[in-house]
Amino acid sequence: MPVRKVDSSGFTLLEVIVALFIFGCISAALLKALSAADRIQGRASLVTNASMLAENEIESIRSKAFFFEALEDCTYTAAAGSGIFQVDRRVIPHDNFSIEDKPEIMEIEVTVKENSQSSGTLVRYRFLQGYQQ
Image (cartoon, rainbow, N blue to C red; front, side):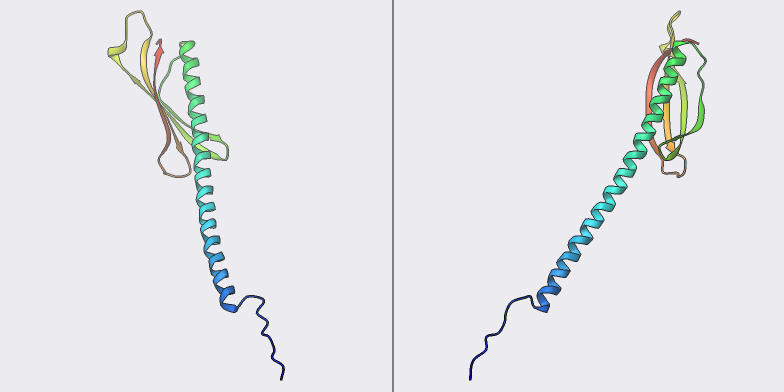
């Protein structure tokens, strides 16, 4: 009687199951990493838009100081990118900085918050500005 050789090419069922398990674990880890990266990118976009709005407000303050226009506290909403933000401007006068016949130096705070959520402040800038009142 002739002896038949067993064909051992291919994978066993156990090997296929182990390979699928490893592939599933790696895929789950990659999906979680992509989700975290997307969340971080979204936050970075919000902060970038908020910084742009704050810088625009600071430039507006500087132009008002140049033309000696009155400056007071205000709050307004503005759209940037795909978001709506609340911009707060607060003027903090310091009497000890004023010098006679010189512009008064004021501390000014510009705060930008996301309008849709109460997630807190995205950016806050404080700076000193020479100002004639």
